[in-house]
Length: 112
Length: 115
Image 1: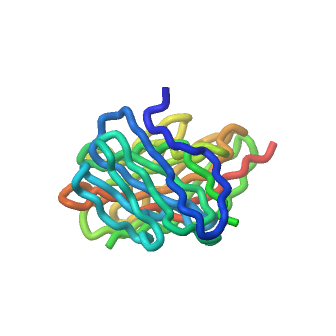
Image 2 (image 1 turned 120 degrees about the vertical axis):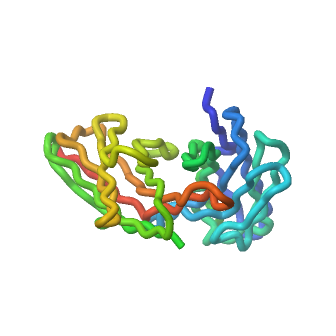
Image 3 (image 1 turned 60 degrees about the vertical axis):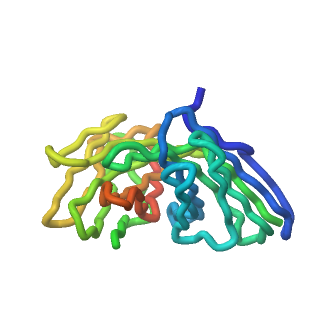
């Protein structure tokens, strides 16, 4: 079984809809991250969490919110989706002092 | 603040040729450096990492990278490209622990391998 799972893997939604992307991990890591990937822009950090009570904004948090329901679960919400939020979204966990990160398979989100 | 520059958004090589993907970084503290690979429709997978010690690091699938502090570089190489190496490659830097357990990624280099 995959160590970091994301659901759904693909989602098409309409402008203005609320949508939640979910991430679960079995690696036992405290640190979890949400990124978005856009062609030619690499990965940009949306939110990150070092434990259930520690949540931090990344470089592009506007329009997004997160919830850390448990050590193993970290959800990303788009309160009112807009077309420029169409992207590939990755969840990752982090471990160790070197901050190696482990990625889920991604969720491809399309906002029409 | 740390940053990563990957020279060349697209690199094309012939099968059997040398692969060289360039990465330069900036960091105010000794960096930890990573190369990740993303195959089509998949997440990112760690290829190799530099933390401390030996500056030439070997990774999976025959890739290696050399940390050169004087040049602030961490270029990725493979002596002989294989068709299965076609993917997007990302260089990333971390300044390690303290309160900043974050990675900064480059914009990626798409590697095409021609038969």
